Amino acid sequence: MQRNHVIVITIIVIALASAIVSLYITERETVRQRGVERVAVVPLSGPIAERASGLAMASSITPERVRKVLSTIEEDPSIRAVVLRIDSPGGSVAASQAISSMIAEFPLPVVVSMGDMAASGGYYIASASDGIVAHPGTITGSIGVILTAMNLEGLYEKLGIEMEIIKSGRHKDMMQRTLTDAERRLLQDLSDEAYEQFIGHIAHHRNMDPEDVRALATGEVFLGSQAYELGLVDVLGGEEEAILLAGELAELRDPQRHELPPPSPFQWMQWLTVEARILLQNRFVPEPMRWIEMFEQYNYPRVNY
Image (tube, helix red, strand yellow):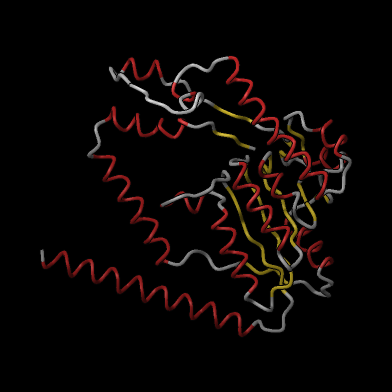
């Protein structure tokens, strides 16, 4: 037992020392580069979600993650513009809207450089930027809404689980059983409202006629070259073209690319600790219960861009 305590204390000390060294190096680099006009390049990849935990934090785009990155950038006076390198198929409507607001309100010029894919919610957050750069072969567009509702009655029956529902409110249990026609219309109205918000958002930020956006908002995807012709993208190119555009918007004579420091060893240790706890919890939960916990998230409609 004493040996285990020594190991734990050693790991904590190493993590703290690594974090301090990382902070020192970052601060020294900031001081050294003071006076240089830099463009921060920030990679954002993965589905857009309201929150993520463990290692998923490094492979998801969340409002918290974007907020922290933009806050770090704003504190560095040598950074004069930002390039967000987005590679995402989309995701949560609310998270997309939160991230979009952060981008639109950020005091420095923000340019989006699209990677392999910046579709649906990925395009939603990109459209709030000051300029969009895409490769000719980037997959983008997919302007639309998808709402999923899962009927778990058959699964519960197969697992031998009988649910008794006591409710107040006529539609409170609508996600616990087969939908009625009236309830399907309710969910369709919900999806249509989110769709109108998507169209209005693009029309406002891209300075387009709402009816022109509506004609493109069929859910179909476009190549970057097609999106450029349709007015959904400003420039064809990659990260370097995005840096040049950001520098132009910030009126920089010689914009210098700046990569933010990667997650510190302490952050990685935090993520691994969360991931290990999740794995241990799952190990001792009976398989039927794991299935139920996994599907419980579908008790409410999931609305995604």
